[in-house]
Image (cartoon, rainbow, N blue to C red; front, side, top):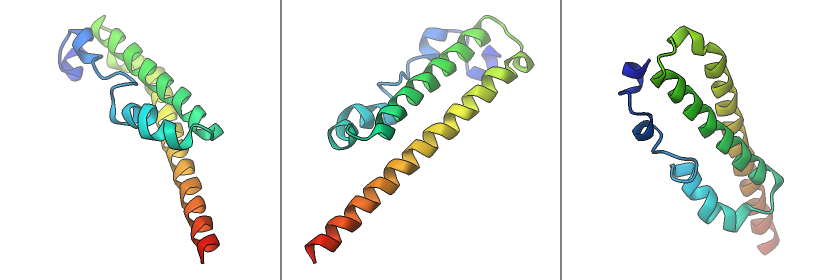
Length: 108
């Protein structure tokens, strides 16, 4: 498994944290300023943190020598979290589109 992940140094594999990835930078910066009042925004942050925790768990298991086929449950959970992340982003995008539409209609 370590070879698949690109090495056996889990510290270097975990450099991309929930705060440092592109979504995390947006979430803690511009996203927070504009959308922190939305419940889906807060939910997105929780899902995003769990997503990174699961990735780190899988990396740890890989570095420990866990066989790839023994990670199927963890990988399935990672897939669910990934789908939840995408769903949350889509819901925020729809909210933004609705706000822009309302603002446009009110300004006419």
